[in-house]
Image 1 (cartoon, rainbow, N blue to C red):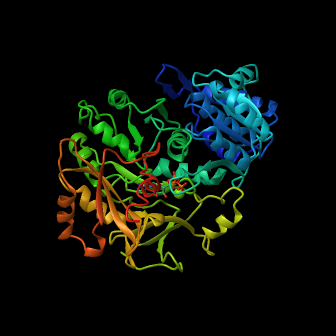
Image 2 (image 1 turned 90 degrees about the vertical axis):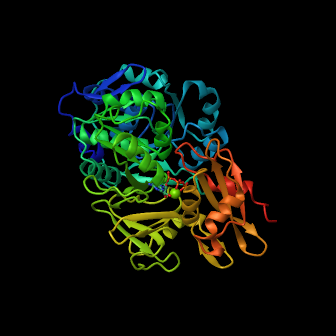
Image 3 (image 1 turned 60 degrees about the horizontal axis):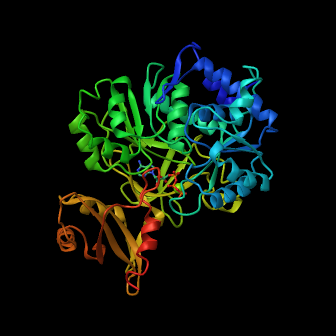
Length: 503
Ligand code: ATP
Ligand code: MG
């Protein structure tokens, strides 16, 4: 029977003996293994009572089996629901209550704690450990190595993926088979992936970047990956000569630049370095080019939409931009209040439409309705502009916009000025409640090691460059900015920390 997304992956299997992945603990998995073992797991899901449309909630360590479980869910017609490994029991209780999974799969070490939660929400429990251990692979191993894939059409749900929770409580994005298939296809073509590629995969697989961008692209290209349980910069440098591509968050690149062995020679076999999930500083882009000779290709996406824009493969990869809308994706810059397109160069809300855009938030019809325009465009929540050459610039999140003394202030403009100072490593500019101005512009700054730059230096430098209403009311120095696992700066945490600064 036809199963929209899995059929597309299956079609790329030319020879069963070709390698799909090799792990850092010395295991390898061929495409033939992938077909056989995902079939065995699909049988195990059915034996656990999973029917088409049921959610399978998965909180496990990164492993080849976790990827096989994702594929088994597709084949069984279930909805794959991966969860961040950092989530605590109270958080899991929320997700189980919200998603009502039929089956919960967790690490064997957490089974005693998670079992009762699963039971309370009416789900069965199975375990999967990092090294292929656990009750699920055990029950799968006795099953047949082929499986009659459940019929799934383009609009059927493939996954519910919760957003990162950077701006508030995570929302479950419903992603269809075609959402995922169309985006993987476009990215393979746009980034020229082929069966010859070897990707270094060091991202978590509970997030869209590691799961749907990296893994789906590799499956859709029939390529292979060096599958790393975690990001270890020393190891990544040593793996470069065995690979052709790397996908990372900006922090990967910053930390790799601190490695002595990183140079053009080490990166000789690599054809493409890709960055996303958070803004890549122009400085990092320049430093990378200087050290390796490669221009990092930056792209922009989100849980709800997969990837929306990308810098070009051929042609200029412009630092500080996220490139052009991908083929099939319509993007416009709209008036945040009324909707309606703005003129080229003006800052507004980024809105997108295309086969990549999700079907809505799980069990949040009101929220879903509020985030779509009547003509079907999705309101991303990101502010940006399109420059004269068509490159999309992200200016920041709508929720991070500062309104001070009645003026709209975009933090990124101020951060750019501060980051350019010699003694500064990075900065975050936030709005903090202020009795006179509504919000007071507040700069949180991380010094470069050994630098003694002070608040007065920062303010002096900005004075001649930005209008007065944009000047920070206070400059605060910290050792590091709070970040989540995807390297995103948590401005909500900063706003909370400095809440009473002007009060
Ligand atoms: P939540 O929606 O729960 O607050 P989140 O938006 O961080 O969390 P994700 O879907 O993981 O959750 O992240 C998508 C967001 O990441 C985008 O909306 C955008 O703000 C940011 N982002 C992704 N790629 C880039 C990029 N290249 N440059 C700047 N920002 C980026
Ligand atoms: Mg978001």
